[in-house]
Amino acid sequence: MYNNKQPIWRRRVYGLSNCIAIQNGAISIVVWFYEPPSGQGAVLAYTTLQYPNVGIRTINLYIVNGILYVGDAYGSTPWQFTTPISPGWHMVVLEEWTSSTSGPFYLSAYLDGQLLGTSSTSNLPRMFGNSGPWPYNNIGVSYGEGIWPNAPNQWWFFNGTIAYIALYNTVLNQTQVQQLYQSGFPNTLFSNNLVISYILDPTYYNNNSYYFIPYYVNTQLMSQMGINNYNATSITPNGSVGPIPSSQFIYEPNPPLS
Image: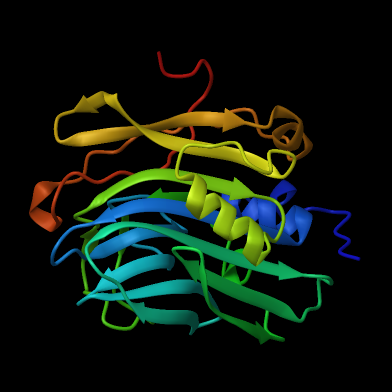
């Protein structure tokens, strides 16, 4: 049984995805997005520094030259699955879990309800704290170079549309993943383990940027992590370093956007 009596984020600042993984020994991230023709860029990432500063970055999901990369890293080693991806709407699920703080650690990925693969390592992954802390969870942007295969040496914005993101504190099985894919988005399936979901809200579209706002919040699970400032807002990047629109999570004090 996973046991972590002294959560790392109480001593060091971590973003929401890392907090979920470290506290529960598991995380599943569900992402719906539209891949345009010639679509590319970072869809999900977490970083040590906020844009426009360049720190250490972990790109969980990105697309280059028609190839989807989804996964994590341990130390300076990428831990990924790759597969061709076509233009259109897609759902990607990234899962990481362990039964012990000393490992082994597991990674699974799905595309449109179909399992891409499962991998294991005895090394501590970045999602569980390696190379951190990681205070920023990014949507639609990351700095690309470093250990990430075929990612450019620049701030790199996804040129498609990211519509919905859901974070679960458990490993979803293949049947559940297929149910999520068949149900579309947004939904509150498996809400006992759904920590939070965010949805793109065109109401907040402004100045070539857009906002993600909470669609569903499991306040009990958030409270267990000591988090109450879970609103998501956008940041407007400089157009000279990548295509817009793009967005990042940053956590703001309450009250929520209105």
